[in-house]
Image 1 (cartoon, rainbow, N blue to C red):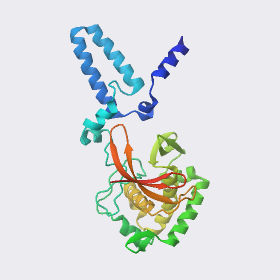
Image 2: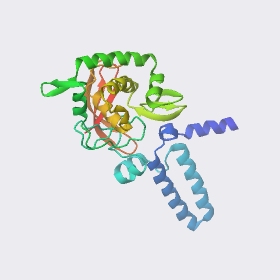
Image 3: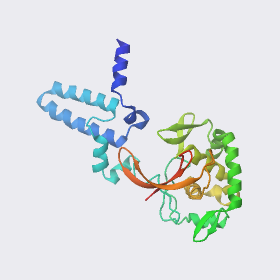
Image 4: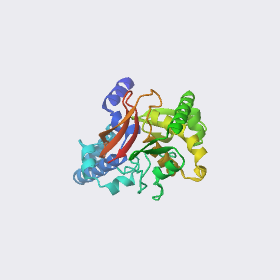
Length: 279
C-alpha cells in the first residue's frame, strides 16, 4: 500500500515547479486563491471548505500551483514591485553596464545580487590596468593579459572546487549544475551562481590577475568585484573548457514569472553561456 501511495504521489508531483524550482510568487498567489476559495465554500458548507483547503494545499505542494496556467498569469499580471519582494526583479542578475550606469552584475560573488556603485566605470578600470585595449572604435582583451588569462584558466580546471573555495572563503566547496546554472555550494548550501561552469572558470582565473593589477581590489565589495569580472568576460575570446570561440546572440530567457530579452555570449562549439546582457 505504501509503495502504491508513493507511486501515486510521484506521478502527481511536478519537479519543474516544486523543490528547488518552486516559484515563491506563484506559490503565494495560489495559496491566497486557495484561502479565498476555502472561505467562500466554507461559508456555505464548512466541511466542504476544509476539504477544499486540504486538497488545494496538497495540489500546490505536489504540483507547484493550484490554478492551471499560473506561470502565464503571474508573468502577465504581477507587477515588478511585487516580484522584487521575492527576489524576482527581472532587472537583477542578468545585466552588466559597461558604462557604469546603475548596472547590476550578472555574477554576484556573494550571491546577494547587490547593486554596485553607479559611478563605477568598468571599461575605464579595465583600460587603466591593461586588461583591455583599444581596437579601432572598439575594445579587445590585451594580448598579454589574454595569454595570462588562458594559463590561469588551465590551472583552475585542475582544481576548480579548491579555487572557488579560496576565492569565496568556503570551507566545503562544491560545484553543481542546478536548473541550467552553475552553483558554487558550501557544504551543499548555495553560496553563489554563474551562468555556466565555463563562466565560473573564467572568473576564477581572472581574480588573481585583477588582484595583482588593482591596488584596491581587496577593499572593493563583492558586487563591485562581480561587475568588473562580468565586464571583463565580455572580452573573453576563448571558451575556458573547450577552447571554442564565443559569439553574441539575441535570445529570450523564460522563467515562470517573466520573459526577458537578452543578448547572450555563448561558446559556438560547446554552447556554454558565458554572459547574459539584458537588452
